[in-house]
Amino acid sequence: MTKVLVTGGAKGVGAAIVRALVADGHDVDFTYRSSGEQAQALAAEIAESAPGRSVRALPLDLSDKAALDAFCEQCEGEAWFGLVHNAGQPYDTLAAMLVQDKAEAAMQVNFWAFTRLAKSLMRGMIRAKAGRIVAIGSVAALRGNPGNAAYAASKGALISYAKTLAVETGKRGVTVNVIAPGFVDTDMMAPYAAYRDKMEGQIPVGRFARPEEVAGLAAFLMSPPAAYITGTVLPIDGGLTAHLGVHR
Image 1 (tube, rainbow, N blue to C red):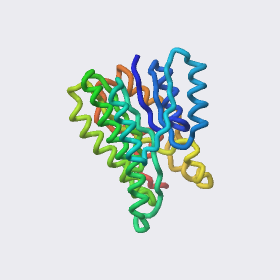
Image 2: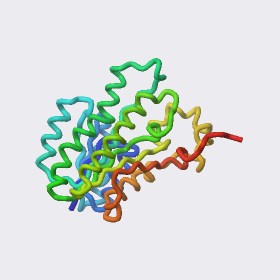
Image 3: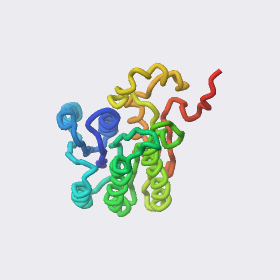
């Protein structure tokens, strides 16, 4: 059996990733910050539907560096096959209005927490000469979007780090990739409900992604056929980043 850690796994894309990994035969530990009831409900649901799998919901605030360090020290004593860093913190504001403290808070959750977790878990992966690391990025890091400067920068940092880590660990059996979703139909999109029709009109396939579609890609990257995929950025955006954006 292989064990995978998923951050931010209680709801939305994270919960879909947990379900997909369990369906593929992995044991899964997932972290949550404020969605305790949803986390416990998900763990109970999987315990009933997949009794042979081990699934644990673990409270962890990735913005708390001391708590993250303590969590990582515990992780180092366990054998991990995979890490999926799905947890994220938004920060939307125009670049001219950017507040550094808020930008740094987003960077801590979106980027620095990933580097800290990867550092701990990859040691066992390297010893085993087998491991998969996946970061959930964003198409915001691939295309300019007003109001997304700080958030996009944190996701862009993920990409640069993951590419370098992939090069450093490639000969040691570890793959490192970034999934870059576009708009996904989750609670996070609720504040933009008034603009949804316009947003979907700019996407070539004409709709938002379903969480299960992002999760399916994450699960594939943990599978044997994905062993030769590393150092990549995989947009899952309905053609958004392929679209020039000039309307006739």
